[in-house]
Image 1 (spheres, rainbow, N blue to C red):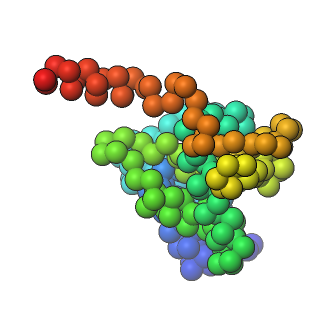
Image 2: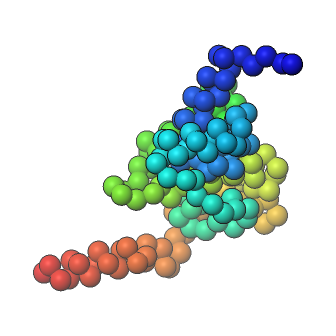
Image 3: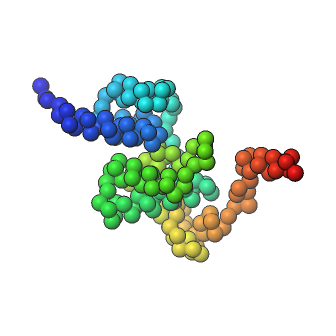
Length: 184
């Protein structure tokens, strides 16, 4: 019969609380925290007041390569890489710290979700660790951006230097323009 340390269990609970507050999905919690599924469910319901969302986690690299998500993903992964290389951060702690710094730089609009969720950020790090995604420098600005490892990335131009023609033409921007016309 093995004894569980009260201190280590408290640390696991604190880690789970921090992850839940940052928006972690249950699958992420189960992977990174050694608490039982039942305890994690109770903790999630207690903190959020609702059951955790159901459904599969993102499993494709494609989302990270589209225009706006690529910019946000690139910012996050550069922060993460810096923390790992220079601050000694590792594992889920590095992901959490990098995500908190990302949120400081790219706070969501009031009432909106951030473009990059914690679960997607965690998945992004896993894609990098499995060599499915990499960083490539933009030929124009020299910033490093997320790219697919299997693509030919010579002469790469980022989404900021070579903005797609439809960039910024979302329903939200159309609604704002329509509201401005109505107000005039």
